[in-house]
Amino acid sequence: MKQTTEERLATLYNLILNPQTRDWERQQLEVARQRLNRNERLSDVLDQLEATLRPLATRHSLTPDVAEFYDSLTKHVTAHPLDSQLHFAKDEPFIERAIFAGGCFWCMVEPFEIRPGILAVYSGYTGGTTANPSYEDVAGGWTGHAEAVEIIFDCRVLSYEQLLEIYWRLIDPTDAHGQINDRGQRYRPIIFYQDERQHQLAKQSMRAMQLAGIYQRPIVVKIEQATTFWLAENYHQQFYKKEKQRYRRMERARKQYLFFLHLQQKVSRWFHR
Image (cartoon, rainbow, N blue to C red; front, side):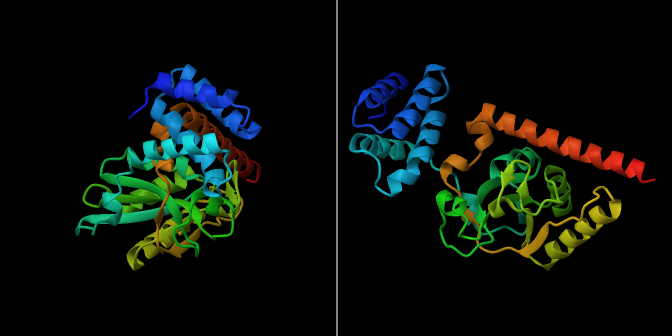
């Protein structure tokens, strides 16, 4: 039976008071309880809590009562599955796909999804060697995968070249080891091309960026052939809708960084005239 917010609060409160609950578990439960007390959406809070508890749950390391509660959370999550139909569907002649990596995939969805002609934007993992990776696998740094977005679009409305223009505005192309506050190989910037046409367009786009002289440092974005794109967990899909306040803080920090980066480049060019 589906629990109400009040019932979930009662369950959380009892687990927090349970002497068998470990301190770390209690901290996560308390964060969720506080969010529910602030009237945040129940589904968002439960999705986040499930993702936080998942690493210990998969290793069967939760205390028994918390493990039972976690099982109820996974039922909640699977009750709101990702609509992945387009990801697995065969593309019509006018449908194309683009895959870009540019830091945390949470910040890479909305700028594309709001454009006319976009049919779907999925968060996922690609560029590595591990099949069916989990978020914890990729975060561990041993899969070789990068966080990326798969964009499925109607090329009669929106072109691949336009998507490339959006991509360049979202990233620092001079940083090969991450993006803004996201550090590590899973955040490296990469353009994954689907076919030779996309390959050539990506190279042309990069050459145009280099010739524009916008950046003092070399542009280090990789251009690689697309391999299997593994969908990320449901919680990571359309994060900007599920965690609006958190997303807006991240988006604001990203925009501020890129603004000052471009300003710094302009000042530097002016002094070197």
